[in-house]
Image 1 (cartoon, helix red, strand yellow):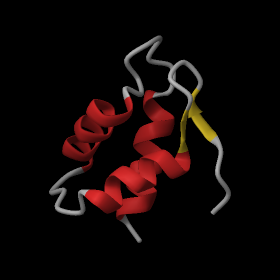
Image 2 (cartoon, helix red, strand yellow; image 1 turned 135 degrees about the vertical axis):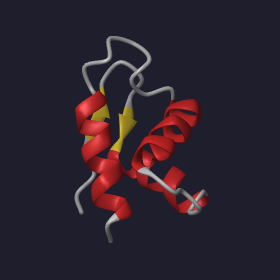
Image 3 (cartoon, helix red, strand yellow; image 1 turned 45 degrees about the horizontal axis):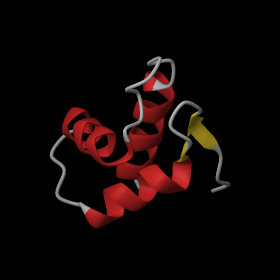
Image 4 (spheres, one colour; image 1 turned 180 degrees about the vertical axis):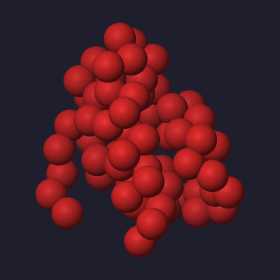
Length: 64
């Protein structure tokens, strides 16, 4: 997977999201994973325009 910026406001990349999910691999749902990724990276706390891209990345990473 190629790295790319998901959240421009907070400079969060796909690899940043992936790192959080690998460090905390006990997620029961995408929503819970999003909350934890958001707490650690602060993504989707600025304009919120990246929310769908972050959810897509989390879903993709968790489905592997």
